[in-house]
Length: 105
Image (tube, rainbow, N blue to C red; front, side, top):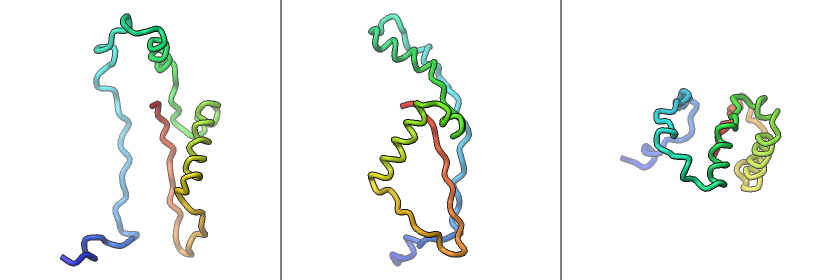
C-alpha cells in the first residue's frame, strides 16, 4: 500500500467526534474509604472536595474567582507553549468551535 493512502490529507469530509454523555459515579468512595484513619490535613482535603462545586458553563465559571484564575492560567500556559498561531481565516472556511471542560484534579 503506498504511503499516501495510509495518511490521508486534511479534508472537510472527516467524521466529527461526538460528545460523550455525562458520567455517573458507579462506585461511591464512601464504600471503600474509612475517614477515621486519615491524618487531619488529608481529612480536611478530602472533605473540602465534597464542598467544591464544578461549573457546568463558562458563565458559571467566570462568576467564581478560583475557576476564573484557573481559566487564565490555562490560557497563559497555552500561549506560553506556542500551542497555536493566530492567523486570518481563509475565505470560504468556517472557524471551529471549542468548549471548556471543568474538572477537579
